[in-house]
Image (tube, rainbow, N blue to C red; front, side):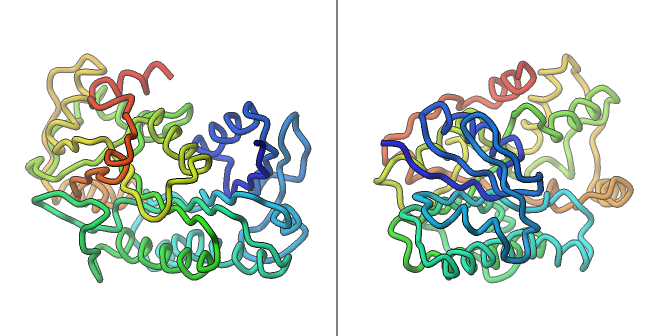
Amino acid sequence: MSQRVVLIGGSGFLGREIRARLVALGDSVDVVGRSRDQVHEGWRAVHWDGQTLGPWIDSLADADVVVHLAGKRVDCRPTDANLRELISSREGTVRVVGAALQEVGHQPATWVQMSSLARYGDVPTGTVDEFSRLPLDGVPQQVEVCRRWEAAYRDVTASVERPVLLRPGIAIGGDDDPALAQMERLVRFGLAGTVAGGDQWVSWIAAIDMFDIIMRAIKNSTMRGEYCVTAPEAVQNRDFMAAYRRAFGRRFGIPSAAPLVRLGAQLLGSDPSLILTGRAGVPTRLLAEGYEFRVTDIDEAIRLAIQA
């Protein structure tokens, strides 16, 4: 049976793939984002500013499913201004959609919400899954942003029949993956060595599995609640960097100490905590529910990303 699906912030690589899959299934899709209003074959682009109610709320009036993908990229300097913008682009947009649903007097049957595995903070040893205790504080651009993001989601989905919260690790791949381009540059210049000793965990997921799991959340009525969305086996930084070197045919990369990483991140406008911290996520619920990952090897994930 076809559905009315509204993708909030669906103009990125995740949104474009999910939109294409839904249209292929015959679903009616509205993509609410910064693009101007426009009707395409099988779907509509609906403009919003991400902050206020407006004509875009009509898209929600008969929505069966809301998929919230909006949010500023976290790869930015850890300044107070950027932190406020990150929170606004996540917590703020969730609450605006909640207000819009109240305005139109309708609740979708399903709300699929993106968050991040960074919600668990920096976990040097052991693993985390859906049953792990969540930290009260941590790196602000990770834990605090996610905490407020998820709190807003819980508030606005209190009366939604089937809320689904996805906490993905690092997605590898996609047709415009900026992280892949950045890693290729580092490898080419011999800079993709072990970072700060290399013990920190990297939880990753191949883009193809990310797409499949989001579609499963939309279509599979048994999915409900919180899910860690990551490949079954996390890798440590030293192995993550080595996999990229193998993929691009380089045997050696200069190691980087933590102070150098902090300096480099400042120069590049990034947040050093993204690479200096980590956690080993386990997709306990997905595995228990029978999801079969298509890619479980980091080398294969990177190879597929390069070929995309």
